[in-house]
Image (cartoon, helix red, strand yellow):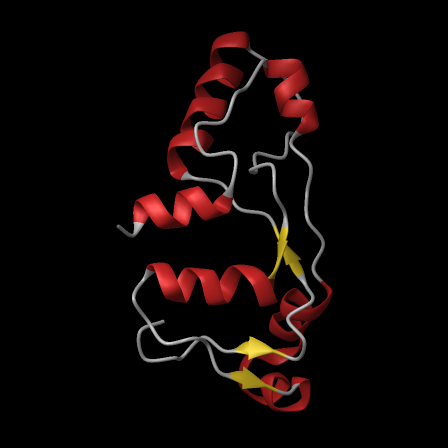
Amino acid sequence: MLKRQFPLVGGGTGYSSWVHLDDAASATVLAVEQKVRGVFNIVDDEPAPAGEWLPYLAHCAGAKPPLRVPKWLARLLAGEVGVRMMTEGRGFSNGKAKRELGWELRYPSWRRGFRESLA
């Protein structure tokens, strides 16, 4: 990140969902204690496009803004999966975890998690 080795691909329109380690741990504890079964998305409340979260992460890390590279070049360097994640990814919902586990996030936003973790 500090050496600008993680570029923004295309328009950076692919969404990602984040979770702080503390929030992931608390969800895991609740699931174990309640002996629940099933699949839960353990993510924060704000899926965000790469064009928004990557520059913010660079800022919080004290790095220069990410370089932008076209999709064709990113395909050569990172492959199709990397390009799709940065341009077509979709966010996830934590509604089931909140509803069924009674889970509450300490870091409901990736912004706060990035800022506090990198301070």
